[in-house]
Every structure is written in C-alpha cells, then in structure tokens.
Amino acid sequence: MYTDTLNISYFRKDAAFDTLYPLHIRELSQLHWTGLGVALEASNFLASPGARVLDIGSGVGKFCIAAGVYHPETSFYGIEQRKELYGYAETAKAQVGVQNVFFRHGNLTNLDYDEYDHFYFYNSFYENIEPGSRIDHAVRTSYELYNTYTFHILEMLDSKPAGTKLVTYHAPDKQVPAGYKLMDNSFSKYLKMWVKK
Ligand SMILES: C[S@@+](CC[C@H](N)C(=O)[O-])C[C@H]1O[C@@H](n2cnc3c(N)ncnc32)[C@H](O)[C@@H]1O
Image (tube, rainbow, N blue to C red; front, side, top):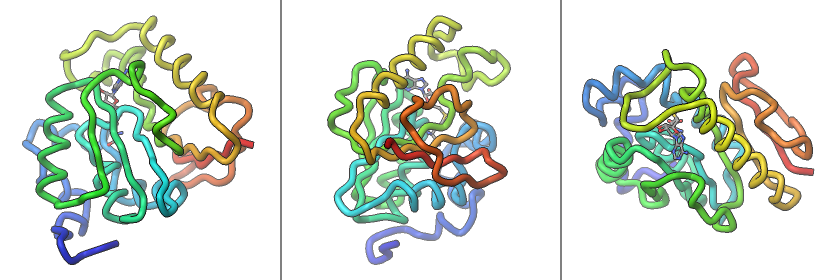
C-alpha cells in the first residue's frame, strides 16, 4: 500500500470507508458493495505489476478504490451502468487520492475487453432475477437481461488467453466458463479465485 499522497484513514474499517458516500449509499453497503477484507484478498490474487483488472459492474467503486490502494502497481478499471453510482465512485476516488483507478459510465456490453487482463465479478446481474435485491429503479431489470449479460460475460471470459484470472464473489459457478480452474476460495466459499487453463 502506498501512503504518501493517500488518505488512508478510510481504510481502518468498512464503516470508515463508507463515510465517503451519502447515507442512502452507505445503507446499501452490506448487501451490494465489496467489503475491504474481500477487496484485499481478491486483489492479492488479481494484481501483478502492469496488469489491468476490470470490475464488471463497479457500483460506487469500493472494490476498485480499495484494490487500487492495496496494489499501486496494478490498474483497476470499473464499468457501471448507473450514472449516479458512477458519479459517487469518481468523487470517492478523488477524496482518497488514488491514481491507478479508472471508472467508466456505460453498459458492459459496449466495452472492448482487449483492454483488460483479469476480472472481478460480484454477481452483478442478480437484481435482474431477484426483485428484492434491486439497488434502485434507475435501470430496467428482467430475466432476459440476466441471460444476455451472463452470456456476454461467459463468451468474453471464454475468449481470453490462458492465464487470465477471475475472482467471483457470491456468484454461481455456472457463470464461469468450463476452461477456468478453481485455484482457491475464501469467505466460506463465497469468494472464489479462478485461472483460465
Ligand atoms: C453488486 S454491485 C457490485 C459493485 C462493485 N463491484 C463492488 O463490489 O463494490 C453490481 C453493480 O453492477 C452494475 N451492473 C449490473 N449490470 C450492469 C451492466 N450491464 N453494465 C454495467 N454495470 C452493470 C450494477 O448497476 C451494480 O452497481
């Protein structure tokens, strides 16, 4: 972790980090945003000097910002469909002062995945099939979208070269292509580390 230009007071515990966000966003934290302990373990697996890691559905940027602070030699990218959440991610990034983190507002179906080496996936499509877990009503949700996004990511991961790393969190194994081997797990098997063979 680098400390000279960073505001690391946010990294003592999740509640401290979540003060970067307004109250209605903090209230969503436990269910929807990656905790610091998970971000540390996931990024320890994904990071390497010069690597480009994408968070597929980056929300308010908690995973990327924490991972970026823990691993300054790796670049962390986030794509987020909700403009409001993207805005909070940019504000939090500036507040922390982390330089190796980059957010984009848009839909993950419009990305050029050649720009990324490794991936983090926190079951981002679940709200399409479980209305009780909706973040808000800013975007349309449906079973059809769940299938479209799941298939898109499966195909993308499948097309990646051997050595591509993936971390899934609270995600069903059927969202991981068969070519990926489970290397490790943590947090009662909710966090899984995979490598393409
Ligand atoms: C469970 S949250 C996780 C946020 C972040 N990865 C973290 O761990 O803190 C999943 C996010 O994925 C976003 N998302 C879902 N489908 C998306 C899509 N098709 N394109 C871009 N973002 C998407 C949602 O809006 C939501 O903010």
